[in-house]
Length: 303
Image (tube, rainbow, N blue to C red; front, side, top):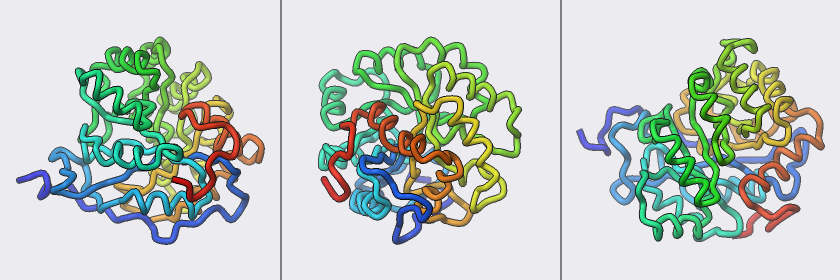
């Protein structure tokens, strides 16, 4: 069986006609801190060990989503199905250098010129992924941390909150900032007192960053994901200056109802009810972490 004919199930594409929230206005300078561009074989092969098979998600579609939702900036994360082949993401970054930043997935041992080219394109961090096939795990965490420090990058972890417990001491000693994706892919059925959730909160209080994203991945009740609210509020209380928001567009591996990004933005009114604190999540926090200029920035539609 070839990578292109893998048994990995085909997932649906994103909702059409993305729109902004109806409950508040997205502030100028807002950053979508988690999204993917996806190519299709043969130009952009899929890894055989993937967990799902996605449809194409182009740069043009992503930029249209940013414009439709009122987001000024975006952060592209190397998608697991392309493994360490970052070509599409890097090409998209180079074409939109003022508006986009990137998080790469790379093997150790790349030549200095390759690393420098990634940084020049707009890469600001490295992703370690232990949940989906095609990712890089934690076995070489120390080496990736050293590389990130050398490049002035941060680390990003796609991990179940339960798996944070054994590595929590290491995370506390990292020489670079680190970000936990989708608040630890934590199913809310485990409860607020779950040891993994409490470990994540402790890490956040101690300096970790977290993405307020992926409600549909963590919810048990489904739309409108009201069961996630008390968990997201605890997370924000733990690290109000180190929370950022992400659309997770094109919302791959979602086997439930496909939501509009505007619905996820509306949920932020419940996750972070205070307008000033919510705007900080969208703007100042994210601008600081990803290196975007403070303030309104380039505005929607800029390339």
